[in-house]
Image (tube, rainbow, N blue to C red):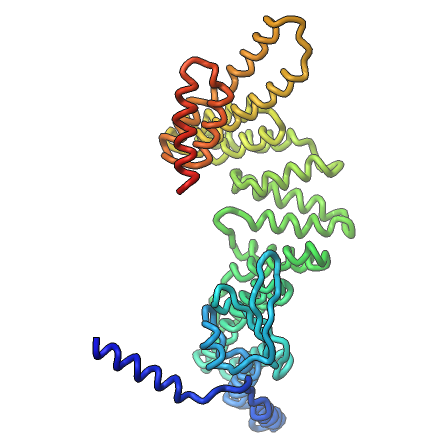
Length: 449
């Protein structure tokens, strides 16, 4: 205990000994002097033929690019930011999307805090323009002059790539999507250099997603987004859920007014995606949107043919049956949705999602029948009771299916809620009131957890 107190006392003394930092300091003149010297060196006929001259130039421009933000990193606490880069000129707040950040404004950048941690920054003033691009050009020239410098060039390129990745991340967080897209793409292009040669197609995907999002406000960004995403696919990139096809669809679809041919490319992109990722709801929703809102795109029934042909070639593919059920749900053909998910449960009896969605589709079918029932006019009580019995019989089909889902995934809140609602609807059926009480009590218990 005495030792701990002594250590803490020494640490406190060290903190007190640190002089207060008054403001952010960037030695711009010294950095520019290095670049001026480099300019003179490459203008010299003899020096310009040496790889070392260009490597030094790459280092100078890299330093110029990163100098203002080199001491920033994620999750820094405000105290550490002050100690590292100085006191801000001003403080405030900024709402980006649905998130409000505390902001500190410095001469060269603004930092963004959330929950007492630094999460992003935005550079507002540069030491030099295009520092990263000029550094890359310099390293490329060094390698061209002497390929034996590959290890030194790669070391420099690694710094450039890491900076661009970081810039992409913080720009995305602050919704500067064009900057994010450009940074991710620049990182990828530098990775293609023969001295580096470790390209990460995910960077192109990140760039494409950034530009797709930006396209909602600036439609001109869709073209660049399509280019990035197409390149990612050409480089064999696929995210685990196939979202790349959905984003690429939006990029093509967003250009349809300027170029009607893009509508067909949007369709082909989704069709390619759905064959590989038939359970992706976004792709399925995009297809249904396309087929139902655009003329001359095709008959929604074509989607059924597409899936059925795929199933004929691979009848045990659960994902295809899952996708088939979702497509028929979108077409409001509940019987075929139910048949598809019955097949899912046959192929994989221990799959929670199979029983859960099968139960939902029985409920949807019951809701549809109930709506039609309520729109009818009945001449006598017997006809009314007979109609109501038919509707409840559909709902009853959902009960054992959802109970099986709950057995596979105990205490799942959505399943319990649906069972509670279903049993209340069917409470007059034999034995169902006791089930309602059971699931209502469980729902209340889960709600409080």
